[in-house]
Image (cartoon, rainbow, N blue to C red):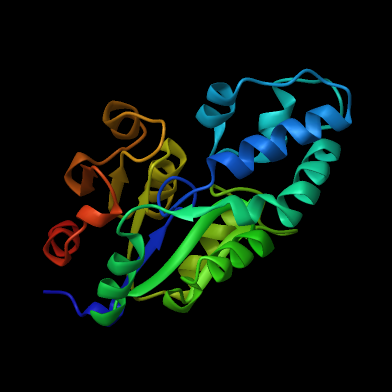
Length: 220
């Protein structure tokens, strides 16, 4: 059995640990409104959650998407963060895994600074050894810089990725590590499996609450 202190478990944030549907939808449509663009239906926005903001806005306008992303973050930082809530059982599960001496972290498509604020607001920041998100040097979850940072930070550790989005599965591919897909987002088990290149190191479960220590060891 692997040494638990050498196991790094990295979680996605939106729809893996938290439900921030309201904050994201309100922030997205606020940015569109500020640039006199039509409102987008909430179900369409929900399906895009997990991809970079610039890519989301580029689907709806020829304007420079970074301008809308800046406006989105103005609203999100002031109000959207505080419309977040933890998914059921998440805090207890993080506490349980931390007590087992696993190293826990977050990798998100959000701005890193905003992700830190959310974990602090929801009082789960104490469980994480790192929070990696968009910065000047990290542009997405699949950015080679992010992968380099994680690999250099934990060179002799076994890494496990947990998330609800196909990009989380692709991140696990790039890191050549196991993946647990959770169905608390807007993607099916088939969509998550299709993004993977290793069925042997993949589990699809209902939610983070369902994770067990034995399940983790079975993938490593």
